[in-house]
Figure (cartoon, rainbow, N blue to C red):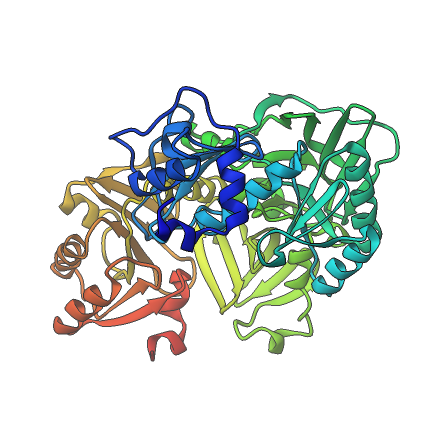
Length: 543
């Protein structure tokens, strides 16, 4: 074997790969996007083929028939197909050698060791918010685990192997013992499965009525696991209603989930489906009827939850009216500072849940986004988002449905890595609505338009005009290059006075764009995409 390979791989891994099973009938391919890595793997198996390790086929030739060759990588060009895991689906290699679960050589070495262990059940990923290391120490003591693998990177004993944060088990009995321990310790455990598992959508789900072996519960969501003599069932619940069920039989798994709600355009419905959105019934909450009519018109008396984005336990987004005691943990944290207006630099004040007051507006809390944004509805005053990092308010739409349509459109742009230059500028109060888009020859986007928001699109350009009920109105722009952004700003300056522009802190070419605007005498603001505050907050304008 090549001496360079011997330096990159331990003798134990080299021996495991020489003996590893291979994907039959597959060899090197000249059209591979990962030729160097393929050649290295091919050499490690003694040029027999590409290894099949722990249920994962490594090497582009072994995975090419199962997924697209390349996918966009946020800010890092394209990611290249390199493996297919029977539980997680396609694994893509980034420009730094990462495979989504660590560096690719580390991943291969780990799975080579696990393959020797013959783990047939998907691994458990275990997270614990506090005293994490103490959990792993107690786990080692409970199961009499001892160091194994390269440099003692694995712990194993009998039918259990631990590679933090993953736990592999060989038998159902061992899996049950691990789940009981996690339940006792209050640890959050989830099966590490993904696109490799078949998905079936159903109008409603059923789950076992017997007591579960493992439960991770909060007032908002819970996860329960049942283990029988033949298979494993994992049930996910929102407000005590089953929304997803994972059935695992040895070497096979099927994901059942509730059908995503249809709330708008085909694009929005696809977005909700991709995010695993569900609509569940919620108990009534006292609130002024004038404020809650719109939200009830969208989701009835229920609550929409998007559990999939970023795999957040309480969901990336929930939208609806909920009693305070049923809020997700992250939403509860937003209410820790309700001592009065002085607790919020924005002046936002909790009157009584779910009612808030801010400036001249009465608002009702109708959801939370990620773990730091509260969604507030003010009826005629539209939809606002309060972010506690930083403490800012933002006006986002005139109607709830419009905002969801905007999220869906932005998600598609992010997925395709399109229009990554993003900025905003204040609008002259006397400017006719739609004039800038008209001068640019843009066409309306009806689903992203309402009484307070007008959306337009053209070639590599998306423009939104937001007519804020309070303060300065503004225009948000997404385009493909800073040159196109400068042309748009030049066009806008022909019909209005423009002295400041906010540029997203995540925008591509932001430094180049800021310097070009500075040469034109335009002040720039580095924005957290809380656009309203950029033009209505004195601290932002002084930056």
